[in-house]
Image: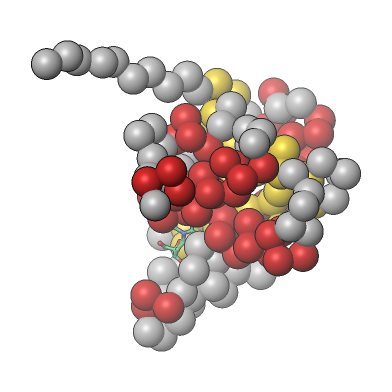
Length: 160
Ligand code: THU
């Protein structure tokens, strides 16, 4: 028997003003993308923006459905847009912002488990890490260097 400690390192920025300009611009695109979220049921809007290696920015937002499980998160809309339109372009950075109609979200809103799994597929495929930055509506931003920092001991294609 052995015990192993798994550590994840995060960087916390106090506000968007502390972000490097390129990330601040990307976060602004995520914030903008929230406006087109279709979230009539949860009233919880999420925007995601991905910076590709050639400078292209692709955005996504959550799209809900009256049959609740048929809806989809912002991060998966964004990554599937990238993979379907630019399958060979690497994703360098992902910025995420969320807003709720019931409270001002002042803490970073982390991507859900299903999105972490989906994003990890493309991070592994491109053989390069994707930096992830996430926030609520205002306040601190958390950065991880990689999707896999958010999903240790992940399921992946080596098991298949
Ligand atoms: N949502 C996202 O878009 N991304 C996440 O990582 C967490 C949750 C969406 C799904 C649903 O439309 C709403 O937020 C409430 O869960």
